Picture 1 (spheres, rainbow, N blue to C red):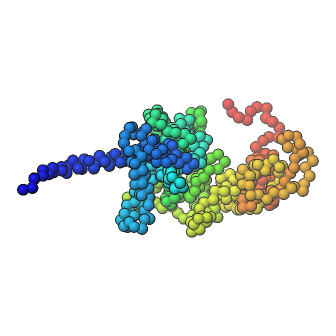
Picture 2: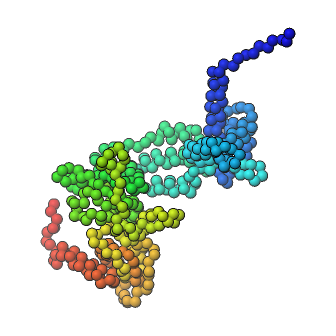
Picture 3: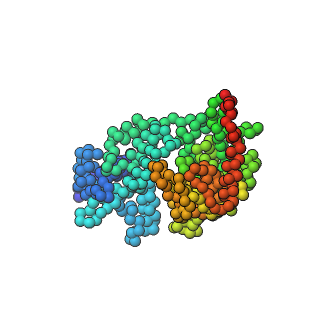
Length: 454
């Protein structure tokens, strides 16, 4: 009779616990791997399996077969990104595709392999160093952030996208998470005295951007400076019914001459300002107190109200996308060149004009109209013309195309000492008429007492 063998039955619960423990351990090892590669590698500094294994041991503590485990983890990780493998099923391809995108999203990058000689590996961040420099520089130079908000954002960016040149340690992560707290901001938008000094500006800008991309209308509360009880005060625009809520069709937003603007047309609110329907207006984003997407007026549950189509006055500034000609994108360069003072007149008349100026004053023209200017030496003789160094100054004639008449008039009036319009006659006449009107405000003989009341 054969000897009986005692068979020990496996408890299904124990098997489940073991499986769960293995998965947790595997995930921890993957996290440690990404942490090591993010802190010690880049494209120019890849590492081999033994080098990575030694760093893994420093993170996870003493253990066995770190080199074998590291090789296994990396191979399993890279297999996820090979969703085009022809030997696997369609379901497996889909699983790998979705999982690879999930890992890329969670880790903000992915592991890459260099196959020359002995394989080496490095971490490729979703935002590279040059892009990170642009983001950091934008934050540091931004006039709308307080110093506390700049420190808050920069410290977190250093953890999110650390590089070899600036290693992130456990201590530095702890310091960021516990020591750099979110700066307090005033959540009551209608009590803001100086809206440009708060991050609410960026919240409003994000809502405007969402509205433009999805072609939604917005509701906006706009601010204005005035004198309240003898002091300068910033407050919402009001009428006899209270705070005005403007309803707008937004089409573009962009930076110009130190300010951020939104270009939109009125749906309601224009009646108060004698503005014709469909006339585009430039709004200062830093003077917007509050903005929100406009709910669908018939059924709010169906989302948001769609904006009107691009008006005729704005269509010349929407040009073909280089990558996809079927898509029209707004050109802020063309818009600013046509409307340097960011104001569209009711009638609007684009002209080609000529102005005369000293060579130094070309800087003023470039700042407002760009560097694509037709510049020629002036034929006129300016005997007494001197530059800021006292030297005889060279005069030039500059041709500017497709600029709106009233905007060009105002530009010349803002720089009368340096810019002299010469063509067309209607521009010259418009500048002269405005100057004559301004001179009427000044008496021929100075008053004996101040014209301003105390």
